[in-house]
Length: 312
Length: 312
Image (cartoon, rainbow over all chains, first blue to last red; front, top):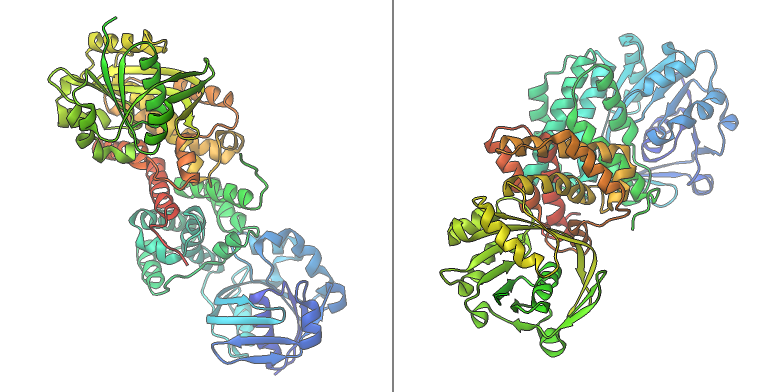
C-alpha cells in the first residue's frame, strides 16, 4: 500500500470518522480542527463505532499551512462554511493533490472546480449516522457507505479513489454519474430534512405518520426528481420514491442533521440542500412550487431560530 | 327603540365587546360565560376601549337554559368549538329567534342553517382588535366594524339586523353577498394567520418584511381568490391583493388571533380558516397547492403545539 498524506479539512463527525479510519490503516492523516483541537492533541481521537471502538493518536492542527501539501484533501466542512473552503484548502494543494468534497447539497463540486480546476475534484456522498460526543470523541451509530464520483465523471479516477477507502474497510460505491447521485440523495434530503424543520422540529417518524406531511414530502420528492431529470439525470422517479419511503419507514425516529442543527440553533444547510436546487430548477424552467414554499419557510425559520429576525 | 332580549353564546373578547355595547344602549343582554362567570357576576363587565371605557352590570349565566328564549342569539364561539354550538344555542330558540354567527372561517352559516333552518341565520364578520384582560375586563384596541349578511342574502333582513348594531354606535356594512364577504376576509386570514404560524410564530410585520414569506402570502391570497370565484363569487382579485398588502403594511407588528392561540398553545382555528376552504376548492376542482401545503403544516403544528404529537 502506498502511504498517502491526507488533509482532513473540516473535522466534524464525518471528517473525523473517515479520517480516523484512513489513519488506522496506516495513512498519514492530518486534521484541521477548531473545537476539539486541544483535547485531540492531548488525548488523541476516539471512535466509538458499531463496527468496533478504536483510538488513534491523531495529528491535529489549528491552520492549514501547518499541514502543508497533501496527496488528498478530504473536505468535510458544513455547507454553511463553503465560502471558507477555498482559503482553508489552498495551503494543502500541490500540483497532484486530489480534493474530495464530502459536503451536503448541490453545486459543491462546481465551486471546487472553479477554484482548483475540474480534473482534481471529486465528490463523496456519505451515508452514515455519526455525531460528535465530548471533545475528541466521535460516535458512529450506523451505516458508513460513501458514493464516489469524479467531477467530470472519470470513472477510472473515481474508482481509484474509492479503492483507497475500500482498503480502509469502508463500503464504497461508484455510480455512472455523480450529478445523478447528488440529485438522488436530494430526493431524500429535501423532503425529510426540510419538513423536519418546517413541521416544527420533528423526526422522520412523525413525518411518515402524518398523512399531510407525508403528502408534502412526496410532492417534494417528485419535484426534486423532475428537476434532476431536467438537469441531465435519468432518475426513475416513481420506483425511487417508493424506495425512499420504504427505507425511511425502517429508520424509526431518525433525526436528519438539519433537524439537529435546528434544535441546537446552528446555521442550517438550507442554501446547499434547498436553495441551490430551487435556483437550478428555475434556470431550467422546471416548476417546483412546493420546493419554493419550503425554501421560503426554512430560510426564514433558520434566521428566526438564530435570532436574526426578532418578533414581538 | 324596541328592547331586544339578546343571548351572547361564547363570551370571549368579541362576544363581550359587542354584547356590552348592545347592553349599554338598553337591550336585555345575557352572557353565557365560563372563565369570567364569577368575576362578572360580582363586578360586572368592564370595557376598556379606544372609543371610551364603560362598565355594565352584565347578566352572566353558566348555562343556556338559564337564559332561555331570546330574540337574537349572538354566537361568538371560537370555530374550534363549532361542534358544541347547536347544543348551546338550542335552549335560547323560539320560533322568531334570529341567530347571528360571528365565527371565523367558511361553512359556519351552512352548519347553522342545517341545525336551525336557513331563514333565521345571519353571519357577522367582525373587523376588530380586542382581547381579554383580567377576568371581567375586555380591551378594545382598534376598529370595530361588522359586515352583516343573511344566509340566503336577504338584504332587507340583513340591513334590519345591522341597524340594531348601528343604533348601538357600531359601524356596520351590508354587502350584496355574505359568501363573497367571507371569501374576501379569507384572502387576508389565510395568508397572514396561517403563515404567522408556519413561519415560526411571527407577526404581520415579519411576513411583510421577508420576500419569501411575502411571496408565499401572495400565492395564498391568489389561490383563495380563485377558489372564491369558483364558489360563485366575483372578487376582483388583483386589486384586492394590492389592498390587502397596503392595509397590512399600516398595521405594524399585528398579531392575528391564530398567532395568539399558537403562542398560548390553544387549539387553532385551522379547520374553519384553512381546512374548509381547501375542501371547498377540491370539490370545485380548483388547484390550491399552496393552501394544501399550509393546511398540512398548520394542522400538524397545531397538534404538535398541544402535544398531541410527541417527538423525540
